[in-house]
Image (tube, rainbow, N blue to C red; front, side, top):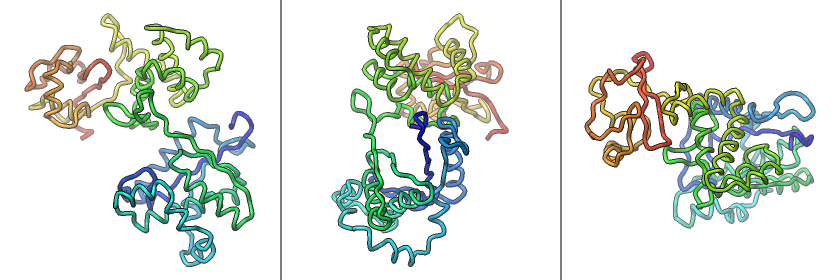
Length: 357
């Protein structure tokens, strides 16, 4: 839309996050402190600055924080001016509320206010920045509709909402999840290599659809890639991984990722492991491979780690580990680093770092 001449307004919920969104949640969200909220807001801003052109130009994106107007609201004035225009009956029909009530799970008044404040956000955005259309996930449909109704009743203005369904893989699983956890856009949470690897490992059935959604590859080129069969589909997966990673982390990240890929999968390669996630330990004394698997989040427990080793799925420096009680020796660290692998697709670098812990 920005490339077609529209101006995106990115709304960061620095205000509403103090309450918590009940949408799609079975329980109340954890309440965060101001420092953590501001840190998260800055991280979100950094991600959008990579994906959009942000600035003062006609079509440049503008990033705003609803804490700027919600933080100064007078509660009594807000209730008087807007409370009468918000229907509790409608709010009770929203799936996010019905789900919690049907399961007889607590829905606090604090969370209920989230829907009211998000409706007010849409009204405020239309007044401040002439926003006419709000985009969001399908779980935000009710909140967006509330905003449309509020603007119609108070400002006599017609606003619009567009929602997208939750993206799932071809086998019905929620998009963005891996066996080691969620896939984050923040490079400190998911490294560029891990992000690239996520796209490289999608199923064959998802490649074409994801190329259309998550890259800027032309329809004509995607149509050609759709003709690939069997092992040749891997070429399309590499293009998907390269394009998706370039959009988020820049094309310059691909050089290091390629070096890492060579180091992992080509035995005679002198490639670099620079792109891999780094796990630090204060010392190698009395540390077992089981301990490393848990610290690297390859296993959620020591029992699970032992089963992984017993199943033959663990390697240290590309050497298979067969002893579930294997102690990590200092001689395993080459240049202060050790490569730990679980299966064919999960790898980390372990380093001894006393200062970092």
